[in-house]
Image 1: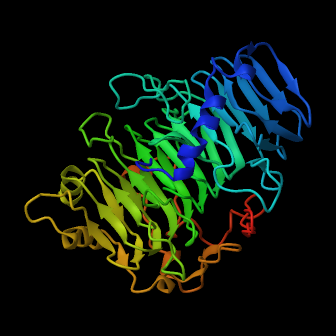
Image 2: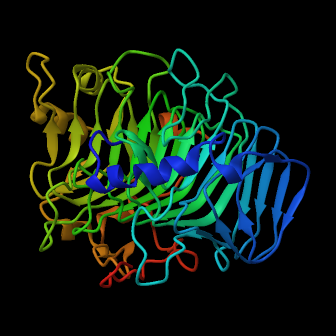
Length: 458
């Protein structure tokens, strides 16, 4: 979630707002009902209240497209959906609607820019928004960010918004106004009945994945070269995620806001509103710029937990982050973590940062608070400080075009993971290794890292 934006966001605002209103957009003035069957080459535009069924093929997404309450969109494996260039697209799955996007390792579903290869850039289109009926910690049902006229939230934590599996989202991320963006994948109060697996967000102009409340669980998520945060949690999100990757491009980051692997708040004011934001995360691999030549100044922390949040992050590998590995900010976040009865956990992790590995936020005023106390709690609970990123012994984690995050023979990442407490939940797959990978590369086949920047883009 950004506070300041690129100047380009302001210059684009008039174009974006022209595409987002259900009432003011000519193509979106009427809702199409019943079953709509779309064929290869068709344009997806407007509002749909019934079933939208695509055959495998290539489509154009024009403007903000709403799948309304009771509707659904079914997207088969191998389908490519490109955004219109002049009227940037976004796909909004409203409360009570479903997205059924089931790709495969050999035939992923790809959402991407409508520009030619070599001319594509982050922010060429909006992204995907899914809205559900699960709980948030807001006193009323909020309007989702991004200039979208849709609300989210409710009381059904088991709400089902469909399936996304083997999906790539490329060059997304636009801002309707400062602090109000569409991310690669935006999830507002999405419930645990929804399936999210094998999703890669590529060169997004904002966050890769942002969770506003909700209980949705996910596995196998990849954030590749985000401008802002890779995983952003807010408004009482309490779901579970296993096997996540954060890979930064040293030369690419938001010019107005620091880019983190995780940014996590209870809310923007750090209140005690419930449910408290508390993601339960395990088996993540966070790879920062590692002070590569030309690293942009706004690359920040692997993990930034602040504004009275709680968290679980265990069995993970954090290497190469410019300004810190684990940063705890706000009295509530810090005090809970160092407490003997803490509801937050940072256990069995391998941690390296270019500067200070553990950071204490300047807003923490608790008497005696220190980064040393954070480090002591983390290392007491099995986390290990690494002197160098190479000490993690991952294969080629900093190779942007062909990364391998598999631990090499002898790596301490291959053993030592533990699945107790929250991680004993049946959702989690109990594995021996730390980080997102053991000896099998689950990224094979459906991901893409072959994005070489040319004169006009990627």
